[in-house]
Length: 160
Image 1 (cartoon, rainbow, N blue to C red):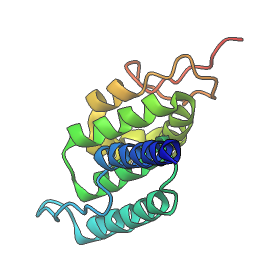
Image 2: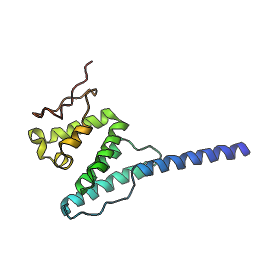
Image 3: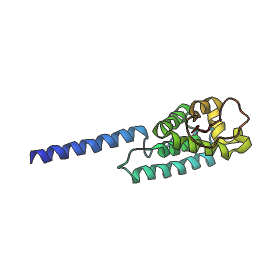
Image 4: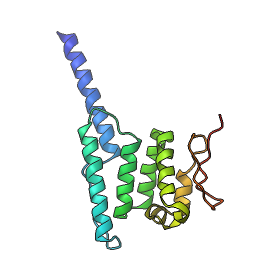
C-alpha cells in the first residue's frame, strides 16, 4: 500500500512540475496591454492569435510546449507591439525546440514578403539585427529564400 502511495505521489509531483515548467515558459491567458503606438486592428489581430495559441496549449496540457506554441505567441506579440527582446526570446525558444520546424516556418514567413521582404510586418517589427539573430538555418534542409540582402535571409540548403 505504501508503495502505491509513493508512486502516486511521484506521478503527481511530475505532473505538477511539468505543468509549472510549461506555465513559466508561456504565461497562458496573459494579454499584454494595448500600447498607444499599436493600431486597434493590429492589437485585435494579436489578441485573436493569442487566444488561438492559448486554446491550443490548454487543450493539450499533457504535452510540453513546442516550437509552434512559441512561434504563435511571438507572432501575436509582434502585432501587439510587445518588446522586441521578448519576441526574439520566444522565437529563439521555438528554434531551440525544433530548429528544422522553426526554419521552415521562418522561411515561409520570409517568402510571403517576396521581393519586398522589408515591407512585411514581421520584418518591420523585428528589423534586420533581430532577424539576423534568429535566421541561422544553414544546417536545415529547406529551399532558400531568394533575397538581394547579403547580410541575412540566406537560408541555405543542407548538403547531402
